[in-house]
Image (cartoon, rainbow, N blue to C red; front, side, top):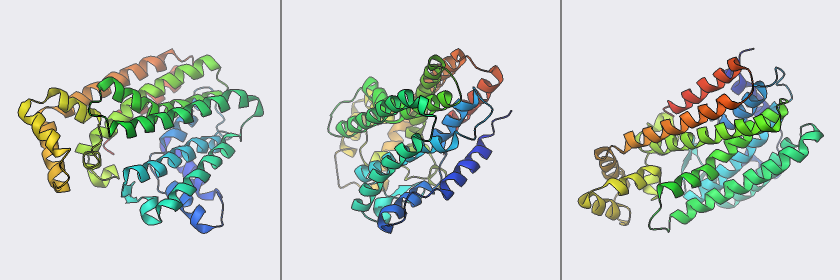
Length: 325
């Protein structure tokens, strides 16, 4: 059996289109339908299906539980966009821009409830494993988001602190998604944990790539505002590394650019990007991305499953590392 991510994503999108998250009031449920149908990579439910595929040919009962992680992910995006005051999501207006902040908050709350509903569409014997795992993951995602918010008011953030933040905010959900799939597919707890660790490391690499694309990506492909992290003064890996490597003149200019509110947005993005380029921050970021991909592949190798099927997941990891959107 060959795992075809493109066909799987088509099926996932069909599941989302046919799902009924609720009807009235429309102001509550239309935003859910809107954000869920914006598209995206469907990375998290895809990893759930990949996890099941490592241990089982029959994926038919995995699709609906897989949507639980996509619902939870989009719930966090909806709330994150409010916190970041982000205008775009997947190249479309964010929910709070299209409706309003109150609608986005309430719709996100309902999405969390729906995530639990879909998660429970599994064999009841798995509840003692998957429910605590999901609860831990959900709490960690919130911890990571709070760390990210705290960083905005913290003068100095270390590389270690930043990597821990993205592990919590982004990577642990990818790890849970794959762990869920492995358990649904009949894998044991040990191998589910090994797969989870592989996907956490891959998730850190994924977020670092996202940071890189925020500066060096193309808006049409990236689907979000390029330079958005710079405009919102986010302490990404790129900024942390630049502050570490900058000479006195560059350091002075960076601090001015990130503290002076009157600088035009395009000018700020241009000047910060120029400093990053001069310091080879792109190369530094690509190096650490490669490090975490290697860790992910080493963890994947430990999973006791078909070599052929693990190779398909390995190739998918490498494709994610090389993406331009």
